[in-house]
Image (cartoon, rainbow, N blue to C red; front, top):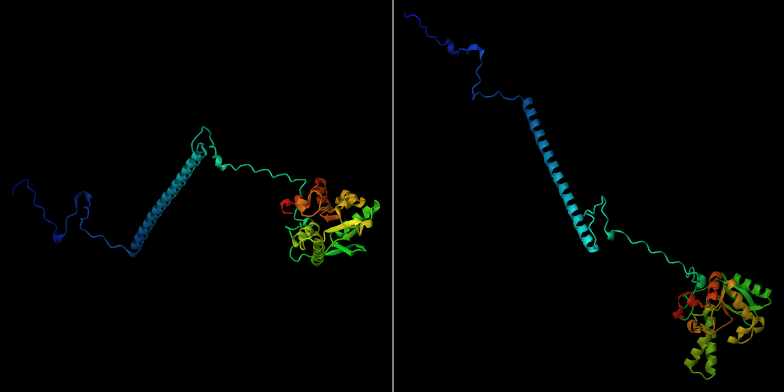
Length: 326
C-alpha cells in the first residue's frame, strides 16, 4: 500500500445525495412546479386584480373630466376675448382685456345703460284724466256710443217744454248754480235739457222743413239746419250733460246770438265754471265746434276742468286735443 493516498469516497447508498457541506442549502431547480393555490388565495388574488382595475378606471375618468373642464374654460375664454376685441373695435375704445395700468379694467362703453329720461311734467292746463265720463266728447266726428242711455234726474220745469231732466250725476251741480244765480237776482230757467234721439230727430227735421218752406234747396236747408241743430246721434243734449239755460223773461224768445248781452248770459259766462259748466259753443270757435255761437248752451265737465277751459278761452275740442275733428 502506498502511503499518503486517501481511499476513494463512496457515494451514499440507497440513491440519496449527500448533504452540502457547511450547512448550505441548494436553490430549487427552475423546472420545479409551484404548489397549487388554495381557494381562499385564488379569491384574494381576483379581488386584488379587480381593485387595481377599478383604481385605473377612476384615474382614467378623472383625467378625462379634467381635460374636458380645461377645454370648456379655454373655449369660454376665447369667446370672451373675441367679444371684447369686437366691442372694443366697434366703440373705438380699448378692450377691457388690455391692461391700462390700472388693477381694474374699464367696462366697454356699450355696457353702461343711458340715464333714464326724466318724465315730462304734467301740463297744468290740460285735463288730468281725459277719459272721465264728464269729458265725453260729442260732435259730428264723435257720435254717441251705440245704445247710450244716461240715468236721468229732474232738474226743473218750464211752461214751454215741461219737465226737464239731466244726467243724475249733474243734477246737484245744476241746482246749486240756479240757486246761486237767484241769490244774485238772476232768475234762470232750464229751457231744454236732455233729449232722446227721437226728440232730436223731430227737432232737426222740423227746422230743416222750415228752411225748405222759405225756398231753400235740400242741400241749403240741411247745411243751415246743421248750424243750429246737431245731427241726431251727435247732439250734446242726448248725453244728458248739456242744457239750454235762459233768463225767465226769455223763455219764449228766439234763441239768437244777441242774447249774449242779457244779464243772465253775462252771469252764466262769469260763474258757470264754479259749478262745473262751460260755454260749449263760443263765438270764436265755430270753425272747430261746427256749431254757431250759442250763449245759452252750457255743458257740464266738472269744476276743475271747467275752470281750466274757461280761463284759457278755448272749446272742449281744443281742451281734449281734438280741435281738428270738430
